[in-house]
Length: 191
Image (tube, rainbow, N blue to C red; front, side):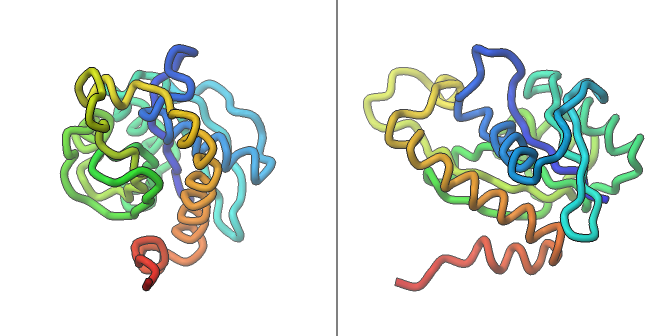
């Protein structure tokens, strides 16, 4: 069994923000696979389905980003999912917009949701990082303001393609393993 976690903040005021791209990805995976609606459990919203021969649980912690580890640890413990079978989908300031990358382990790079997960699970979970880029010149505010801002019109038009890439990465992790998924996702095409 795999636990696929989308990170974000609950509440309408956070819908459509860069920080909630993890929620968007698991919402899209649920829709694409026609799995049941999310239900409340584990201080989050969860559903389950099958990808090939594997059972997959989707989870959207409703604890706010800084406490995401509380929800994920509760789900992982109840479902008996080890850290290396947990895939966390989250926004990444240090990746340019539209880039999607996989990695296992590492630090939190200032991401409070990842920091909370490391505190609860250790560092050895899979991270599916969706690049949101750094604030552009002239942006009024800091990194926190940037991640809580909404996608502009161009980014919003490109978002479906980014989410498709993220979903393909999740499916590859589940069906073919992390190593194979990293080869496919992290390899840049030759130009």
